[in-house]
Image (cartoon, rainbow, N blue to C red; front, side, top):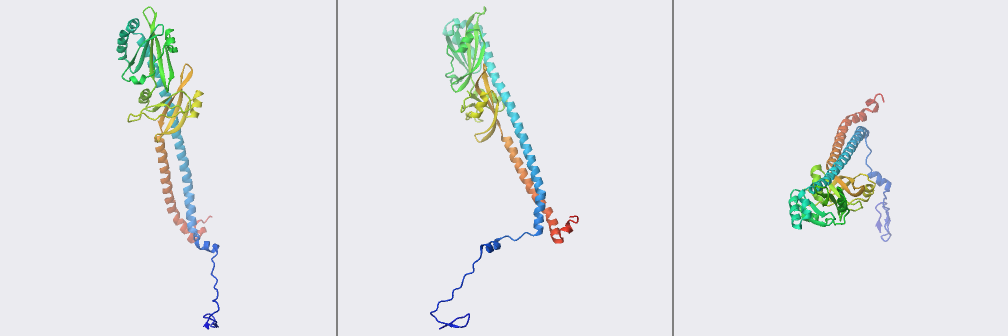
Length: 356
């Protein structure tokens, strides 16, 4: 026999032990033990005073930063628009220079005489005249439109591969009609400036035609950039996805051209200027697009790319200033509200605010 410790009574050794039920902790009781202790009155008053002091400051700062950034965006848009018009005028000035050089070349008396002479004489005259010109492709045809000779002014001979004018070209026919004409025509994947001027003798009789060509390639874009101070692009055609001829990067390598977006192409076909933002080589740019017209027809697109680095720096500075100001205001409001909150919790609300 064994003795039960709780009752002092004897029980049989073979009888089962009493079953002790475990104490179950309800989930509500567990949550009650994990719950944070309630805030004291002074803590609540301190939080209220901090929010009251900090919220107007944050709203005012956010409005001020938004206004400043909106003004910066508007200024960048106006700058892009201005650069777009100035750059397009600089490009057209290059086109006009090609026409003026063709007229000046056609007025040379030795060239008129060389047209009636042999091929060697014409080559010598063209070589002499080519030394006086920048990089150009010069071609000469007789009064019947038959091409007699050509010469590349400058050393960039490969720049003009495939740009020769054929005798049946409309611009040659225009020169045979005593017309002085300058056009921009797409040739392959680039735009080419064509200028024609008639060769006449002293009696104003037609002796031949002078044709001058210049591609609107990266060299021309680099010249416009040097005068403008902004990266430029030239697109041959207005079809979506056309890759533009761009300027060179600071180390002399050809920059990757930007494909013409479809929405921009639609607006350009309507003779409208378009402004967009894009990221090129990890740099944000504000882009402006304008149509290039010749004889009333849109043959390409001219674009400028204004760096948005200044705007990004201003946005980062404004955000940093707002964050530092909010942190400082929070610390200041917390320090100023600690004593009133302690007094109110100690002496009561009516002692702090007698009129309340």
